Every structure is written in structure tokens, then in C-alpha cells.
Image (cartoon, rainbow, N blue to C red; front, side, top):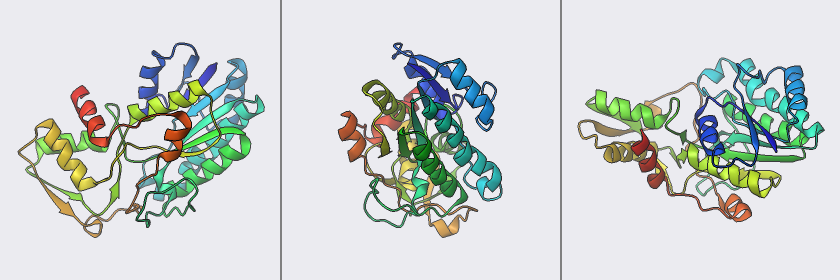
Length: 282
């Protein structure tokens, strides 16, 4: 197959490129904005036709959650309209698409893990635009797979793990929120799941993926410092109310992964095991 991967310079896009070397049976076209502007429908149509694209993995998105509150038009363009352009182009060819979405499509008021069938209720611009992107992709490409994920980190780009490592070495004390609960996702593990879907055949629908386990941002930070051997920084718990942000965060972001595990027969690593692997690489 000829597969287009967008957002190749991001966390997930970089992990995809590493795993492509282990999956040489397909041809990959790794693009970021320099190679393909996904907000340009004509450019997408031409690229998909010229390279005979059979499938698209859309890793590109506007992910600055707080900035999205004041940049709604750009967020809408990248998270809702651009996925529609991609889905239309590959759908016209009878191809498939994997769209990466987010736990922010929920408001975070649950107390049990979110399944794919539960009602969505985003309470931020980021979450609302990602949800519209989901609808658009499913409407315009029959062979589409939506994968919602949460708390993404990797050895690439800027993320929570790298920030806590840096601050842990620079500061004697850090305050981190303890009343927001979720599960981290090592981008490499997500990429492995995406390749399982590609190689076994994309089965349309909505799926959830994160690592296994449940934790708060505070406990996650404590684990990051412990695994990295950082002992000079005191981490204290904060309430969400003590750290106000422009965009509302879900208080509970735990995703139920039963569907993707059963559909593709995959085992998902425990969050702390994946964190240790990432820190070792860093």
C-alpha cells in the first residue's frame, strides 16, 4: 500500500517513522506542512492522486489547548476542516483513514473509564474542534478509524515528561495538579497499535488507546523523578483551582481500551513500564 502520514515532525509522527523501518512491506509518504499543507484541499487531492494513496494516518493537529481558546478559527481549520479534506480525498479512491483524536471530546465528569459508545461533551475549543473532525472523517471516508488517546508523550518534541525532567533538575520545588486523573500514553505504543491496524486491515469505528493503569499528574511527576533519579526537587500536590488555565481540563480522562485490544489482539503496556523505557532513551 501507499500510505500518507501527516504531522511527521510531531511526537507520534516521529515514532511512526521509526516503526516504518520494521514494516517495509508498504510505501510511506511522511509529510509535515513543508511537504503538504493539509489546509489546502486542492493540494491534498493532487498529492493523493499523484502518489496513488491507499490510506492516510493523520497525526497532524492543533494541540495547544490553552491557545486554542483565542485561536478558534485556526484550531477549527486544522482539527476539523483539514481532516475532512484528507478523508474526502482518500475516500474518493476507496481508501482508508486513521484519525487521531483525544480524550477532550469528553467533559471528564465520569468516575469509570470512558467507552467508545458514551456520549461526548467537550468543554474546550480544542475538544470541540477535534470532535467535529471525528464526525467529518467518518462521514467522508467509509473505511475510517478514529483513535482517541490521552496524555501523549515521547522522546520527541515538547511534552509533560520532558518538562518535568527539566524542571526537576532546575527547581527545588514544583507544584503539580493531583485532582485530574487519567493515563499517560507513550507515543511509541500508540504507533505500534496503529501499525497493527494497518497490517491487519483497518476496521472502521471509534477506538480508545492509552497505556494501562490510572494516575494523577502529581503521581506521574513523582514517578518521572523517581525513575530518572531526581532527588533534589520536592513535588507538592495542587488543586486544579490553584492552577487556573484558559481551557477547562477533564478531571477524569481514563479510557476503556477493551475494544482495540480485542479487535486487533494487542497487549497494551502498563504506563510505568513505558515511562521507564522512554526515560531510558532520553
